[in-house]
Each structure stands twice: as structure tokens, then as C-alpha cells.
Length: 120
Image (cartoon, rainbow, N blue to C red; front, top):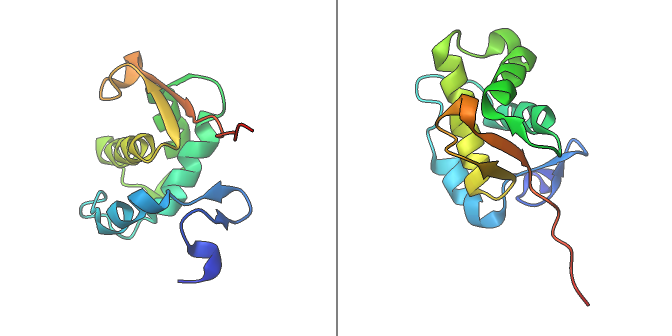
């Protein structure tokens, strides 16, 4: 693993990998099922880019991420499920905040987690 690929470090200057606590889960999770060739980091980058700092419907985030990933993503519902699983992972890892039941895409929202500030 290169230094830039370690948890907590920046990747491509913008998106950081899941926190150290969740990194082992990240490596051991077979969330892509039969589509292991799709790079989970690329999916996460598309999700983070689609989310932004303001609340957005999960369905909209999935649609934007699927559009950004294009033909690399499995077609139809399978591709959307892959993205939804990565959204769930990002919520558990603390990189996204959620409102509502994120399994119900049209009636839940996500946004980037606020950066933690230290208090003196």
C-alpha cells in the first residue's frame, strides 16, 4: 500500500479513504457481490461529489453517481444497489450524515459530514 493510499490520507488531492476504524471493514466487505471489478473508491468519489454540503435526496445522489460512473456500473437496479451499499458504508464510516431511513431512497437525505473542529 502506498503512503497516499493509507486510511486518513488524501487520495487524488480531494477525497480521503474511510477512517482507520472502518478501513478493515472496507477491505473485507464484498459489497459489490459479483461486480468486484468496479473500484469501490471510484464509487465513493462519485457519491461524495454528488452529495455536496447540503441535504440531498438519496435517490438523487444515486442517480447522479450512476450517471458519473456510466458504463462501468452494472445496468439497472443492480448498479443502483451497488451505489446504495456504498452510501450505507460512508454513513457508517462517518463520512456522510443521514436523515430518515436511507433504505427508502426517495424519502431520506444525505450530506457530507461536517469537518470536526478542535476546541481549545
